[in-house]
Length: 385
Image 1 (cartoon, helix red, strand yellow):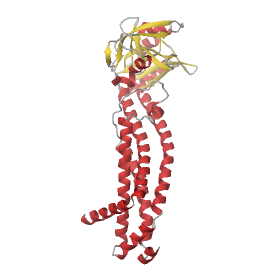
Image 2 (tube, rainbow, N blue to C red; image 1 turned 180 degrees about the vertical axis):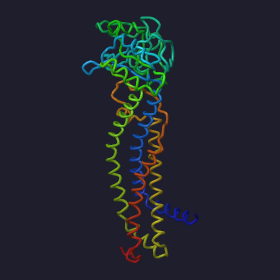
Image 3 (cartoon, rainbow, N blue to C red; image 1 turned 45 degrees about the horizontal axis):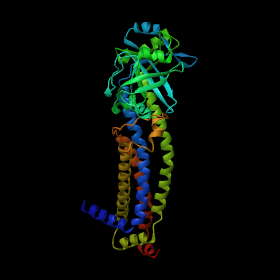
């Protein structure tokens, strides 16, 4: 152990004598690690947040499809689906999208008859009358309104309708409510001119989660124009979207990884005359080839670990403290109303180990191999150049 510590101390002293070269490699190495780590950390955190939120989603969502497009579903579907063995409850849902020309953004309008679960109000209450609504923090910010103010929207008949804001949702629920406007179900039906007896879709709860696919097959046989979407399919869709977006970013930043590899190889293989003389002197003083290689290994490990930890720390700060402003727009999606929320630090250790292996090991190899060539050469020839 003492021998290893002495060699490590000598390696650090050697790096200090070559501050310019060592610092340049550390900075480029750290930037590459920070870029790749930011993508992995942000994607994994968003996927974990989405998975937790989707845990409260319905077991089954039933939509009606006509000509490949989503259509309103008749109330008669609810009655027959509720009689299928294994179905606990069927809740018709009424919702839609509203384009707000004042802000150039899309709002989600939801009609309720009972208080929805998992939504926390920052101030106020849920709507209880036809001229009331509750809004998300993003809607309040974009429209410049708050509780007690009036919110004016243009209905299906191109007429302005005013609603009194009786509640504003907490920013803690921004992933669900940032662009949300809630009003009474019949009020929303009138606003969008939904025909009576038709809803947007049906939320189906099943007694046994293992029977969700079976219930979906029965619904499909009963109603060929229905599209049952299981909870598992929704989760897999989110995973696929995040994986695709993160893969696109990783493909872009892989160019930076290749550029770093080229720089590291050039810096490592291009041994300066001073470094060659140093190796020759050490060999002349009695150091064997293994000692020289161990010295260069510790030099490379010191640079690689320092740069990797700096890059990983920068990525953690960028994602979980600053909110990943450089990557969030690509990974989150196209929506104008991006929810502002603090990501919970979900870290996948397997991803970190893989990233460390793909960056540290190649650098160590590119450092040790050229030094081995100089170490096995006659000391007198090395010192003479």
